[in-house]
Length: 292
Image (cartoon, rainbow, N blue to C red; front, side, top):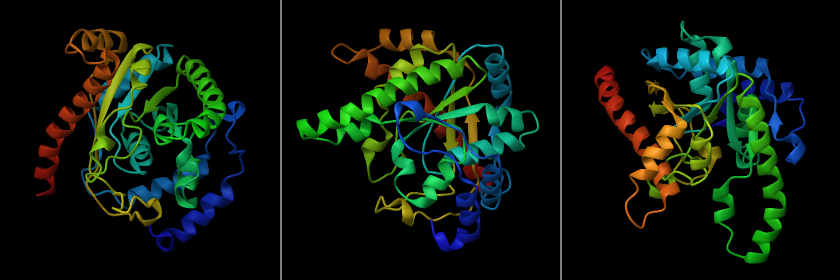
């Protein structure tokens, strides 16, 4: 993302951020800034080609109804860029059958890295309500056992607190939103498409699960993996909602279908990623036709 292209917006975003953004077990739930969401929404609007939309919004209407009735609801979405969630939020806001109330019920789970990498990503992510976790991918990259032990002293209390916060919020009308890959998909890094094992725990503890495919990308990752070099582009952006499934039923069926010798929990996660990929591939055919 070229900071020069967004200098005025970023200055306004930074000015409006007044919260405590430290990372501790006492601060895993972080409230966003409504004014900033409008600024970011205008940035997203300028990137969306005609036809950008939420597909199958009827499923989302029903998911929101269930969440307001006290049922736990989970959105599992593909992840291609750091503007996936802002784009999703904006299009939910603009969809007549959904709107601002539904958008504001979304509560993403995000890793600490997004608030530590660059001022740009920090300004964007801190503008939305979220629950912060210490991502497992960060732990997996540590090979030194002593260093890992020290990091776990920080990560374990934060993640335990985040799970407690999520359990509370999911029964208070918030739709928990998770990117099961835990990172943006980059074609040059095949492992970035693999779902993280913890998603099994999410699936089994939610009444309702909806998969969301992401087709189109208005902030494609730079091949250097340096987020500060990502640049905003215009694209036809589509978020496709699946029909709602029972989390417990999906988990049981996936575990039962695990091949011999395969970890059943990881197989559940793999089935989540397969469901997302299937939905994505189906919608990409339509999107390409619309692009002409």
